[in-house]
Length: 371
Ligand SMILES: Cc1cc2nc3c(=O)[nH]c(=O)nc-3n(C[C@H](O)[C@H](O)[C@H](O)COP(=O)(O)O)c2cc1C
Image (cartoon, rainbow, N blue to C red; front, side, top):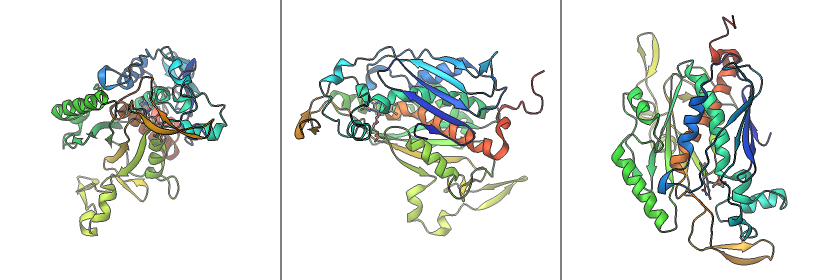
């Protein structure tokens, strides 16, 4: 399935950057989940570009749910969300049709779709399509919260500037991130990051960063060996996000530098709960959650569309060429991708939990039904 993901809870994405609309079909959801459409709007607001550190394209993201929702609750049948595109400016792309942007998907899409692809604004490969992902993810996040499972992501690094790590008080840290479009734990670090993004934008350039995610409240025992490990499923989902080029769990590549005595997470009894003293393995052993917080990081590359002159090729003439871009682009993607990472994480976890406990588990309605 090219544009679909999941086994029990599945998501299909459709749409292009400059087409009439984008959308998502979420299937396999529990019936009876009370949906707050205001929360979906808020999550879309966190993804929406704003200010000098984002593209000038302005979309209201006035979404419509056209199936799968009745009287405020999911029905359990496919939930379809439509999001119109209102602010596309396609003329910027016609002049450079034959000149693929280095680092973007123009050349690979041309090769795969033989020139029939909608190339305007990156078409189906545009970051714009993540709006549909975020809307669907907002549904999954609400489902997880009914079971006390919370996801929090912050911009851990941007342009070489580091945010502080998550502290011992997870709840307080998650509260700092909940409504922030530029989600950092240390406001001073966030200010320095924004200044660095603006400086790159003034140079016609872009910067990248790292997103760090924690998942709290996930029970031990979720994940399927060998091929549907929790790491494997999460990595699959996270690598679907445009511009994510690295994913690591716990201490990740750093684990390879340690001795076993330092890398192992020692177990202890915390009342009648098994916990670990450290969490270098990011809450996953053998592809299965161990009940500790999941911890993982995504590397987000600098925006490929920059305003400096770049070397490319003319695909129609078969010659080398120079590219000077027009169009509206983000000077950094990392802060906008934060809510996309939360959304993909929620989708993957809903799917993994539905596989483990059954579809109805995620709405807390299974025992009662509708009276
Ligand atoms: C939220 C978001 C916004 C993005 N905005 C832009 C943008 O304005 N300009 C651009 O060239 N790429 C942008 N991208 C990244 C491209 O879509 C991506 O780099 C491209 O599809 C190639 O995929 P790859 O980087 O995964 O190889 C954005 C990605 C995300 C997640």
